[in-house]
Image (cartoon, rainbow, N blue to C red; front, side):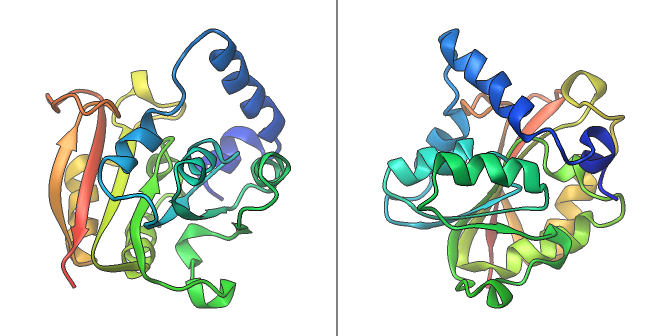
Length: 203
């Protein structure tokens, strides 16, 4: 079972969406992740939102002209995503077993984004398998972007995955580190408790 399922029971889609709706009403910008991705690849690029949740990031990218696919294991989150954007492709799948061919999706994404602490909330021990699956979905030169917490202040669960471990998984999957930031606003990474990492597929 994933740490996310242990944390939520797989039934928190509506509650999760309501929290972000409240943040939006308060004036908070909810599109930092999408803006970050849009600065990396041009409109029209194919984007896979891995661990898409309720679709907040992907829906914004689709509005900006990106060709998007969303995948997640949490049915309650996908129910919200489908209700908000029924015309977009949403698939329920375990990231550790993700196979684009089984979903009828081409494995030539320009960018894969894993936002919202996807990596630390996976089933422990599957992190490398997930990175390998996501890397395999990229075209040569494509980018994997992942933002996640590294300490208790930035995670809803005890810290597990470290940056060296994540980088090692990426290297094993044929991905090179391009850049790393402290926020989705591209602030320089300073060794703090949250990191946004950009890796490129070498082949």
